[in-house]
Amino acid sequence: MTELVVKPWRVPGKERLYVNKTGARGDSVAWLDCKTGVVTVDNPEFEALALAKVEEWCKSFGSHVPARTVQYRGTKPPAKAAPVPMPQPRAEVPFLPSMQDEDDLARNLPGAGLESLVREGEERYGLLVRLAAKISRQRLGDSSTLRGLEGEQVVGARLELLRAAGWKVLHGVPLPSGSDIDHVVIGPPGVFTINSKHHPGATVWVGDKMVKVNRNSFPYLENSEFEASRTTKLLTEWCGFEVPVHPVIAVVGARKITLGTAPRVTVIDGEQIASALPSRPAVLSPNRVDRVFTIARHRHVWSQMGKRGRKTG
Image (cartoon, rainbow, N blue to C red; front, side, top):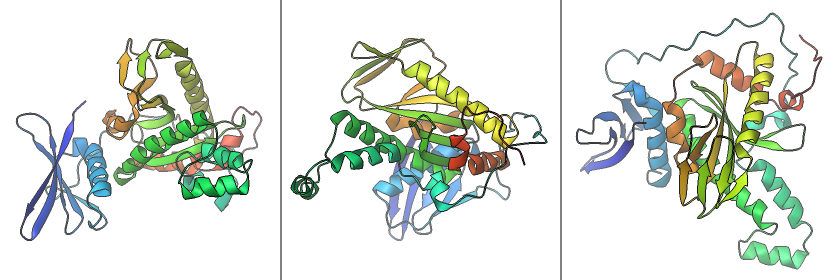
């Protein structure tokens, strides 16, 4: 995967941010005019990665930069990668009711599911304890839940960077079982179901069927594959065309991640996820990305996962 580096540049009256490839040549991919907010893309092949780098820099150092707009070197916009041909929509798809504000999953913040659990747990403490925790800026509750919440928030913040490149991001997608999918991300390479795993300082080894954290085995791979498989069936049925879904495990805080094999589930450092996903080949057209997002953001759709005999419109 091509790595990109960010290089700020300033002279009196001008301020720019260059995003280049690594290496001796360091070819330019894109650059940001910090005075106008215009991003000029030199290499469309790496547009998504470059825009993610720009937004990450702006979030940390460029709060003064105006809202970003994108232009391309030359008079014509870049040619997009040709999407893989997909079957035509079926004549009948399930009926989708109108969406109320409370049904819109796009409103969820990273860690939405665990945040509600933490808040419920805090209510079990006395008023004075809760007040003291608030003053000291500490969260009350089970340490593993709080650690999981922090992991989801870290990964969610990285995924939010993809919005600048036209990706769609959902957090805390609820399932009928009472659990949720930490993150669902939709872009040209398809749909990704992402599970955040927070293991501070741990050594992680990934085999073909199991993940070991400090030599303790966890069924992360099997669970993620099952989740992605069910999501594929659900979104394909509701969209009327095949929706490819790939499972991802985003590990946060690990000291080392070793891939013993190449599992069907992508296991990656959660800090690098915004750069890794856009490097995959395109399989969805922009119109289909929008269509999948329209379906996936509706709470009602996920409530039907695993059910049969839905009414069609």
